[in-house]
Length: 241
Image 1 (cartoon, one colour):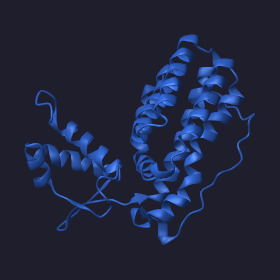
Image 2 (image 1 turned 90 degrees about the vertical axis):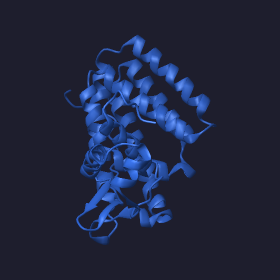
Image 3 (image 1 turned 135 degrees about the vertical axis):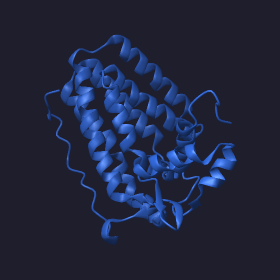
């Protein structure tokens, strides 16, 4: 049920976006304003607004005279979003190492404990805790606006993450989170830079396997598979922040 006291269009957008990212709708599935409006007991106008916003993120394709379909996952967009996210989050952790905050470290350690507790439970729950971890880093660095930018960019990456649930390396990701926190606590910028970059490049290792398992979910540029660039991480790499 939607909250009648809040704006309807953003709620419809959030529900549909979550369903698409979780692959509850498959690429190529048709979706109609009238059916969604009926399902949520609302008029078609807020649904139309939600569709337009989802289309701007590349999640829907609105085809004149042919209706609206769920878009395929853009392979190129996944690589671009990962590249941009790495650049932004690398600067975020470097900011945090400049003057390590003990309260932040305690909060992150608490989150790591929770992540370990759910590691053997529902994988989808871990994805939510992973989001919280990275959002906490951005907030602590005073980069909440940057995180909102990341959220808007990574919808295609998130679809890939849900496709990879069958071989989601939770223990490895928690170990990488722990390394990031250790580097922040030590105030080691080079260490934090290498840790966050290695963590965010993890998706590149899974992409070929995910593509092979679900080829119909992806749109490849020119029909050919681009080679993900996974250059060696220079531990001493440092930038002004």
